[in-house]
Length: 443
Image 1 (tube, rainbow, N blue to C red):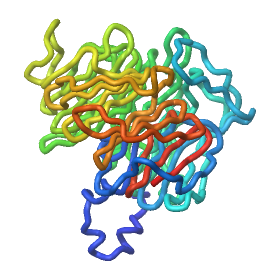
Image 2 (image 1 turned 60 degrees about the horizontal axis):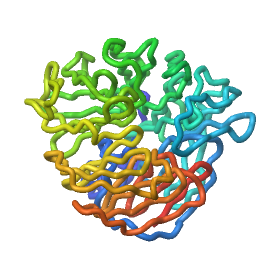
Image 3 (image 1 turned 45 degrees about the vertical axis):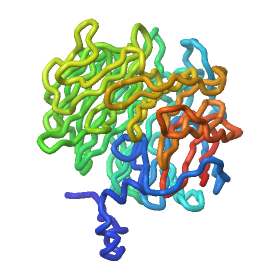
Image 4 (image 1 turned 120 degrees about the vertical axis):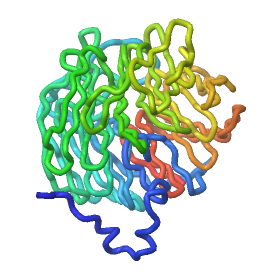
């Protein structure tokens, strides 16, 4: 039985609105981590340089989950600790400590009115003690929700995969067991958001003891395929990319020691690329007819521009920067935590110490390297862009507005009185920020 509800907005809207099509939706909806097509870009509306707060709404609990938007509704995930305010340590440091936050949690999905910020509904997906630890800088709700206007999908790693209607009715929940993404003997927390495409949900579960990629049916939660990744990846926190071409649809999974692409329908390996940083966090994304992948930590911090038709082992030989399938690469241009951004003709890659690099996205030529914030702030949220502007958020709550160009120009610096770890969302000329304690809409 098909449990997916019909889209009420299409049924009730005039034919003209229905014919606006998906191109128009991309300018108004921000359906998953990094928005439309995982691009981090929204066009079609003027965006602010200096701004005023439209609304500010408290969000309970703790989470680095980014807001998503469909129509006039905004959705976000959080974890509420029964013991009160949970610990969180931000900034630039190298501590490997786990957080003392293993008591009872309530994992929640919250739905807000995008125009007013009013809470419309909340649902508790799970209430129990966490099965896995988290790092001091992480949370128990790191992952971002995903929607296609029919369903809301939440994946909290060890706390399950959940599918809801747009109105908050539970379709199904699936327990995938403990997924402990650890290093140095410490559970660092789960952070890979679900990828929703058609009637499939793809999840990347790269725990060192049992790494795998799996596909599930949206309509029922039935597992379609699962492929082991133990030989491909020791650990990863990246969100998988579903990339559709005329001849095939592939799933690109960032990892170490290999970035790997799989056939969306079967899970069969299509290509692999060796090398990179040993803590893969940035998510793959498409732009300018290529697939960009970056990572960092350890010996290298590369970024690759990969041609989508790649096949087989496309690894670069020592000293190589390109080959038949890799248009260009740079071994030191990648990012550790942030997912880079391609906007117009430029690739922007931000380090966690605030150094922003701008490259020609087609050939990898470096245009500039600029430090934001004087090197005192950490940067974890991924940059977003639109209307000729780049928005970069520091952990301390400063938002840098930078002109999209080959030369660095800071247009403004806006300050919030709370920390920012989640990547912002853009919709219809407004930006939506999730701080530690609030959701904030500015325009």
